[in-house]
Length: 234
Image 1 (spheres, helix red, strand yellow):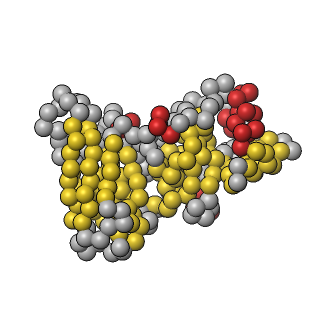
Image 2: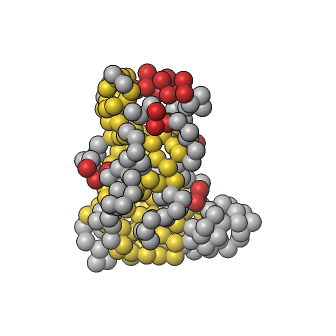
């Protein structure tokens, strides 16, 4: 049951999100609401069942489905695809529920298969006193990044603010099948002691029309600065 799966919430978070796409055996989840604790991005990559681990395969869900999940940060990656900034969902308990029209449905607890969302949060508060509906601003990536125009045709402009002392990083563009189609280096700050706005132009000539996921990544130890989002190429 979902209620019992929240016991011992170490390195775990409860989030509400919408399915945004797939990559290999992983699923992109766009975060709508952090319910317990927080995650590192507005969109996270949740790895499912590889065939040899006890994890739920989220690819069984439809894109645009809204789910409530118990996710856990990757600690010992089971393949080179998985990174420590990604998440797992266990299949050893019912760690997912559906959300629609302010109602939560699924195997919530013994004899309980649906309830209003606010009642669901109140129920969790009884076993997790720190549960709260946190404002989205509290969990936004520290790197403020925008990509425009979006949709885009031939080139896009990416603008980001790097906090002081932030190291060199990279950004990648993936299609919804998980194939990397573009890679670019982030310009290092010219003045590492000050917060600085940096602008770059991305050449998208030759990129087929469609929806893509961009992902900004930084060296180890700076996971909190990572960010990701959608980009539509026309």
